[in-house]
Length: 114
Length: 113
View 1 (spheres, each protein chain N blue to C red):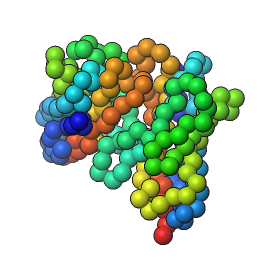
View 2 (cartoon, rainbow over the protein chains, first blue to last red; view 1 turned 90 degrees about the horizontal axis):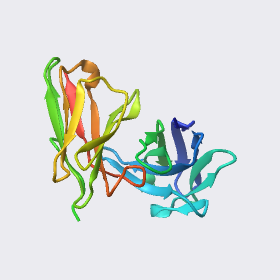
View 3 (cartoon, one colour; view 1 turned 30 degrees about the vertical axis):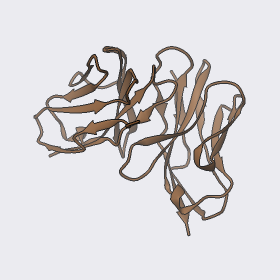
View 4 (cartoon, rainbow over the protein chains, first blue to last red; view 1 turned 180 degrees about the horizontal axis):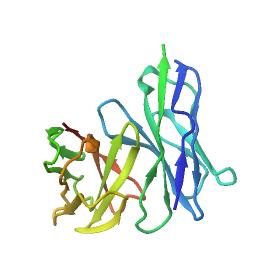
């Protein structure tokens, strides 16, 4: 079974500063990895996903993430954040192939300070 | 293309009652998954349906059940409600299976008193 850990429950950052949201996973097999964002009173929206291929994945809204198999990490980055990026971000993992359930991390609340 | 819709958006029920939540996936999507989101437990997987068959099930008691219809619409039912069932229930649809990509609805906020 897979698991995912988001060590930071809250990350405050000033507007226009860079940010990194950390995600580590555990699995004995190949995995697919995802980052989702949830704005207040809304459902989740997919930011980006890693299924295979290039380990650097670019997503929407200027976000990117790098899959690091040796460190079992999939950290999310943005070079310059905006007030509108204030939201909760969820990392998720699933075993590659077939019908496998998706396991979500506990979320990281990104607070962008003007 | 219309997104995932969930009805109702808000619901207040009393302990011991039962409740049915509805989810309409994106047109053409055949997989529907349900999640429970609470501040303490985060997002927890309930079950996934594909072509009217349950493909996966999470670790929830039998009070939680679901089904999917031939048009891919899905319902989940919770019987004998407990206070701890208060949560945001999210539905997500996928073209084939949730392990590739999911599109979430806005959720149903269930409050049990």
